[in-house]
Length: 75
Image 1 (tube, rainbow, N blue to C red):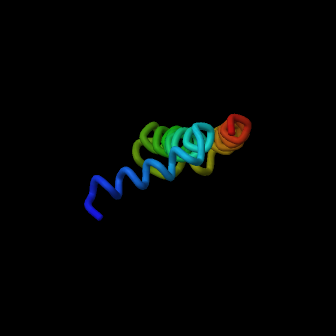
Image 2 (cartoon, rainbow, N blue to C red):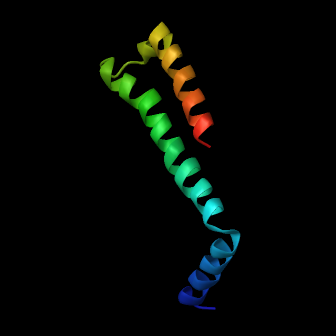
Image 3 (cartoon, rainbow, N blue to C red):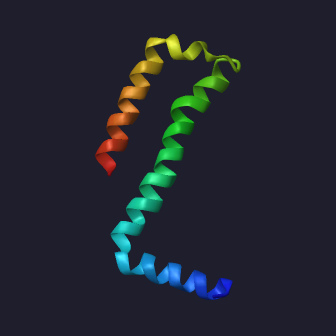
């Protein structure tokens, strides 16, 4: 089986599961999770001059809770 046939077989399997399954898996889990991690960890890390001191602040804890609730409600 060559690469083209493998890709076609993989696509048929994905397509058979339906659009909602694809959107949930790719859109929400992959992209949503990466967006969540970026905004919750990377941005405060950069804003705190590349130190992990932001973890001990109350605002970080609140932000983590709020983003977790928001991301859970979207799925």
